[in-house]
Amino acid sequence: MHRGKGMKFVGDSRVQDKEQRNTIPKDYSEYPGRTEAFWPNYLLKEWLVGAVFLIGFLCYVAVTPVSLEQQADPNNAAYIPLPDWYFLFLYELLKYEFAAAEYIVIGTVGIPGLAFGALLLAPFLDTKPGRRPSQRPIATGMMLIGVLATIWLTYESVVAVDWETREEYSVDNMVEHEVDETHPGYEVYAQNCMSCHGGVLEGEPGLGPDLLDLPHTADTIAEISVEGIGDMPAGMFDGTDEELQQLANFIVENTDTDDGEGGDEDTEE
Amino acid sequence: MLQKLYDWVDERLDITPIWRDIADHEVPEHVNPAHHFSAFVYCFGGLTFFVTVIQVLSGMFLTMYYVPDIENAWHSVQYLQSQVAHGQIVRGMHHWGASVVIVMIFLHTLRVFFQGAYKKPRELNWIVGVLLFFVMFGLGFTGYLLPWDNKAFFATQVGLEIAESVPVIGTDIKTLLAGDPDIVGAQTLTRFFAIHVFFLPAALFGLMALHFIMIRRQGISGPL
Ligand code: HEM
Image (cartoon, rainbow over all chains, first blue to last red; front, side, top):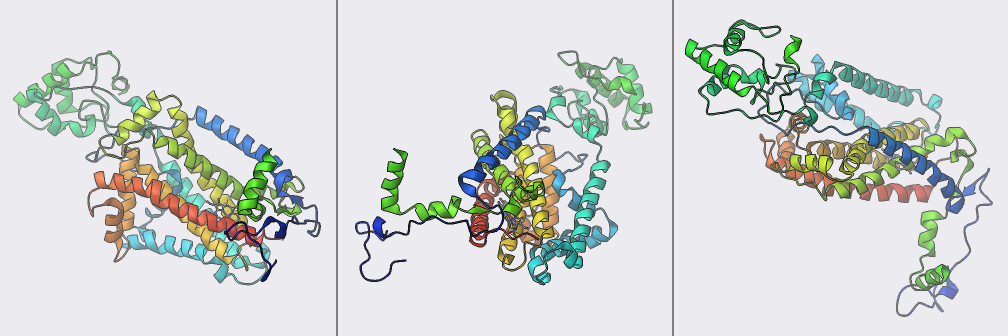
């Protein structure tokens, strides 16, 4: 590089005059093996790979619509939380006794902290120059254990999820239904049945079916509320005979949906 | 014509060195899949970057419709995916891209780890890499809440409880993220939105710049 006296610049800037610049391009001839220039030789092949990758990705996106569940309802006590899949290993870890309840700090800070801390500091824990996995059995072994544990925890967590029931949370299965909240039976319904059959008779996934388009008469419904049916135990209703009558009337009067559909699960049990 | 334009700019700004730093470098034989097929493992870093670009672009389009408040967030997503032309595709790219980027960053980390490429002189770049990993997880965590559906809400609640379990500063972390020590609500959504689209991407870009500058300085690690 040119230094000191005799330097010329473009105008009053600090950019060197073109004449004085070093314009010799880099030379790769000294690099060993079949080295090739990134630009443009390698990039031409690289973008082909990128294009194939992009096409594959877009095809997947096009055939796999993203689900949206119903709008968040903080009062929904029955909902089982589920994170995105790449956090499942942590959820699963917290189910183990040594990492839950009073030991929760071990599960949330201790084990992950150790694992990710070791990952962060790997270059300072494994300082010998040998790079081959066989030359550093401890580092390789720890990483293998970590990876296998993560995969195992994720797998355990995935198989424990009831994916079919979760499907019912999707907006595609959302029931748009309204009930008459001024009906004298509504209060009775809210106290006795709503937790399993939903705020507007739409059902709760995993707990109870919807009560839409029921074929039953008020008397049958009153009977079911007291005696139970299928998986529904007896004695769910607790109140006076008058309230029972109001409840049955409420359900009968509000069960019909406009399109006459729905109620698909009622017949199963 | 193009050459003239280039010369005109170059005379004033001396851009050739910048250009050389960015694009004029060698690709050694051992990382080139055209010569050794097994060298495809070196693609994972580049693919991570590629998917990150997809995330940034699709995310920018998502914010044209998304409304970060608890009354409208869910409806805006529902509208986007059912009413807007190609809305389903844009949301799909961002949603599945988030998973693909995690897979790619994981594979990239494994490649670097098992090749021992984090050893001297590349220690600093490894640290930057692990920080990038954390930022990606942070983006996944904060982005999950944004559609404000049940899945989003309850997973975030659990996530915040995990943050709360940290000794001493747990409650402060939770309050910082959620805007309240107890409630997951309006504040939480706006904070997660801000973190997801401003704070973490800023950290991501800064760290990626460091990552790439260091790679270019040092060159890729040699063959095993
Ligand atoms: C946004 C995320 C990331 C991007 C875009 C990225 C991108 C890249 C690229 C393009 C390379 C060149 C070689 C290759 O592709 O394999 C590279 C190298 C490297 N990356 Fe990353 N990376 C990311 C995350 C990480 C993570 C999570 C780690 C480690 C925990 C890491 C550690 C390294 C190291 C040490 C090198 C140098 C390797 C060598 O010289 O052989 N990177 N990165």
